[in-house]
Length: 595
Image 1 (spheres, one colour):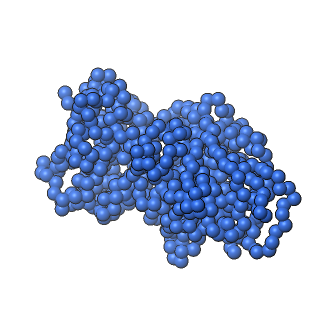
Image 2 (cartoon, rainbow, N blue to C red; image 1 turned 60 degrees about the vertical axis):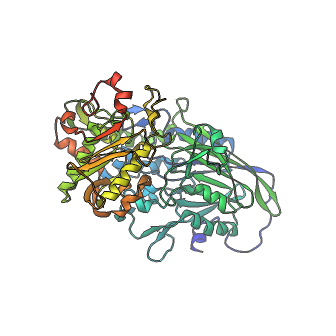
Image 3 (cartoon, rainbow, N blue to C red; image 1 turned 60 degrees about the horizontal axis):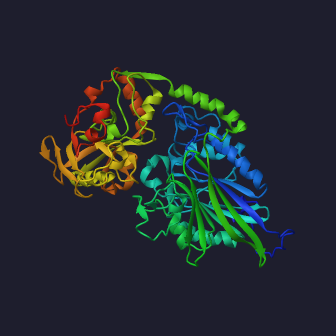
């Protein structure tokens, strides 16, 4: 009843209702954003360049157009990860959290109806999240976020709203991976239950409370990726049970259960999904009654607006869904920014530009990034590992080795002056640093899994030397290829996955399974993120209060005239030598590649 008291439009009693005055057919339109990650403007703060294909200010234009086409019969819903992701999010969470959050300002201007929590909502702790929650003019849902003490609801679980006479129920869920990725001090007193079982408990409640339509707004997506071209809408309509059409994403337990919720729980009409950063215009999944459940996801960073149209008819005393369709509306150079959203948030954007333009140090030469830095033991990866090693030691926890990934192709350090933006560009996520104790068995298994980033190399038919991305598995994420320091190791990519590690030595000696190591590792990987569950077998010795990104900035500030030649140490190799194959002709030789 507490939930019903919160929702002024929710029917809680059993009194019979008279039929509506107007029972003519109508269309209920759902508009969705997800994984905005504080991208309001069409601007990449990490590269300092315009990006015409992103930004809530442009999505706002599409929202107003979609509303105008179907006035008074629509809902605007977000499925999480709104307040983290760019330096704007960092600034207004950690540098100056006093003003109203710019995302709250923009979302209020657009009159969002509801939002589901994302895992990154918890990155800055509950004080920042609760402040944002108090600033927005709409409820933030999270049915599977519970209070550890008694299992009660920590957030509003669902909303039922009257939309042109149709009662639409929205259940909010978030991936339970929060408990793996997030620092414990950011989620005190909370537990994250299985979304599938939570939906199983709540969907009947929404129906009993009078919902004509049930929508699951979930920060979670499909647990598989099409083997075909993901940008082709037809790829998402293939039979999900056909193993030749779908490839596993490498999820942590329960991370992406959207498809299973659609298939196993009756009474759901639509799943609005997120988290996996995929443009999914439409998936149709059969539930146990053979009915189609529609699933959609609007990618990330405000690149698309999701639009679902539900054809409603009144029969047997209630509204029912008679048809459903969905599409993605793309943001591009032809979409203008919404003047009102832009005006209200321009000051925050300008403040962020000034913040990231601050000079913090210098280099003697460039630290290249992208595939050219991933496919060889590079100065950029060694720099990040040096930062992590130094941070661990400064906090009383010296380590034997460190591991780090190069998250994007844009991250690099130029020669000469280095700004905060340059430093942030090589580490775009808000990861914190762990020091963990592991053994040689964990290390060996992690290294073997690490090599599954690459496709098996066919010496008889190698990929085109002009396409370095072709050396990796198509669905492999760049943040799941780690480069290690202080150990000597190598891979033979002509071997099948699972047997590619050719050697593993520490201080010139073969590593044994029982050998103990203290390692520097980010909280995502240390918690088993990316499928590296073996790290959860280790022991957490220390967790940083600061982000790795901030340690990088301070390291650059404290080490003027950084020299990539001095930073770079050669301790791993690939067979074949991918740098030589893809880059030597165009970029020249490098220190750790074959001469």
